Image 1 (cartoon, rainbow, N blue to C red):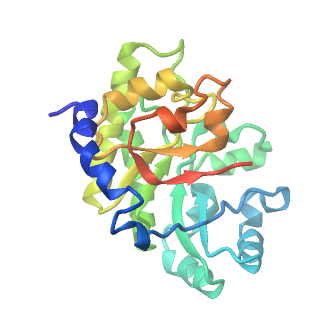
Image 2 (cartoon, rainbow, N blue to C red; image 1 turned 60 degrees about the vertical axis):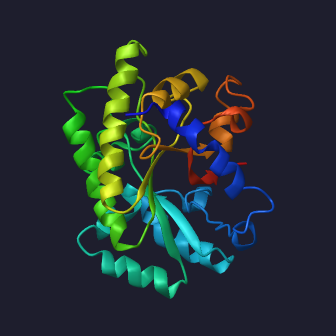
Length: 252
């Protein structure tokens, strides 16, 4: 199999044609603008999800991204959530995963409930790989009902003791397997670098992405996380060669 860099080099002339200003496709380009309805204090928390999406709709948004705890109650009945969204003229862009350290700051009662739906994100640990993949494919199956075209995940916590070449390799193996399965479901798989996660900074991102398959593992850029990763990846948007899943998260 060609390395990621070899693959990207091979398609760079084509990419230059497709995305040039004179491209036939440029006139047909369209950008969807959505929102994560957990971005205001009054919208935070599972109990406020319905209020949040009502207000999101009222201000004119038509696409939302949310997290698994907010919609897990509809796992067995996605049609009900579909009807709610349709009545608000909203569509689901994607649903992000939910990892252990997201429980920080929750009340003991809330943490106990959220623990029931927390997802395994220990991608660096081969003994937990099977469960991590199964948890994420459960999410993909839910998203498929809504016609979502990509899965965006947070990459999970840093390995105990920090990264080594072995932990980078194990994460890439896990990501490649998730990517294959997501592709087989007709969707794309994107990883979202995050401060204090296993992909925090240019070194982590480059090491992991170098070992993954560029045809099935993509990046989801986040302006806030990349620029606030202790300035270690300043200019990353302009210098990274890694393919993106086709969306950028902007957090002010």
